[in-house]
Image 1 (cartoon, one colour):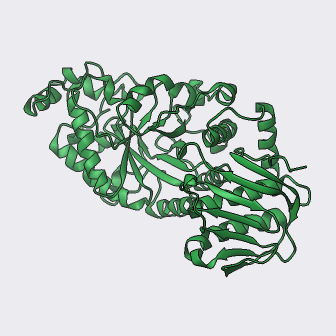
Image 2 (image 1 turned 60 degrees about the horizontal axis):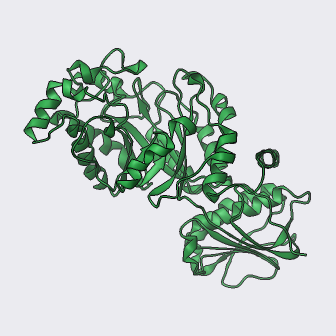
Length: 472
């Protein structure tokens, strides 16, 4: 009788069961294909540390083109293009073999091995068979609100480690907000908050992200949410009340929005971003663009109306879109793709942001269709289902997300993101948010890796999550 599919998180996409079990011998080796040693040695070292903790064995890394019987073998020598950048094939027979197109796929296959081992009493044996596993969505993401709340470095590292275990692959760092600029600045040292991340901290975060194959996406939120920036340099701020104030609590005292119509402010923003974009090695940089005063607010601002008229635009709202496109060209000059929040559409406009910008759509799931149909790559961050803000009583509904959530099959849907916002909870410890985040992020991992209806009940899924947590 063939072996049933192993129970892991997220569930395997494909499994062909063999018979019997493979057991790691005392003298097991981790062999890296010598043709791909440069690419795979860092991944092998990361896996080896975890394997030693899980099994109490102490295998060494060897480099060879052909493994021996009972070895663990990592190789990029395979031709399954459908696996793309994150999929892998796991062969469990007389040896363990993981094949993939990239080191990321190898590391994900290694996580599957570790999860299986954690669930057996001897921590040494696995069911024979073959898994072919790959994600439904390329972006499976979390966002932390570092602008309102300072998060400890060790918490962020632990979060990245857990993201790797469950194959989440993007961490979005919201680094600035109305009253805190959480980045050390050499150009503007007085702008930096008392508790902030130094250049050394950023380098460390990036190193952890590289080790755990996490895409680190930084965000400096502009042009709204900029009270601290405008008070640092008042020349940057709008003077018109309709743009200086807003309906959000942090916008009640003015200085909410940088005057993106002003050449001085535009140049200042570029100078600011030039200090930070090169610090991050990931493919994207996020510039915010959310909660700019909307509706008819732009039309009530003489500065915006004048700018629109000078440039031949029929709407004052076009100036925001034009600035977004200017910033897109600037971000792309660093070799990066720009990300923004959906928001520009809330004021009348005749032009659209460039279609190569990734839109983080935080409207209700069905409403994001307008961005998808317009040709934008869309990361779904729907406020009604994917926001965690305890003080505003916003929690991801676990039952809904696991059992009822319909994920988009639109070809422009690139993934989903849970956003952790710290509104009115700036002083809460990291553990306060972690208690609310652990289960939803595991559900996010399950649903976005597989896409379809889960094959097990929510109760069985949460039991597995607890089992893997206890055995880590």
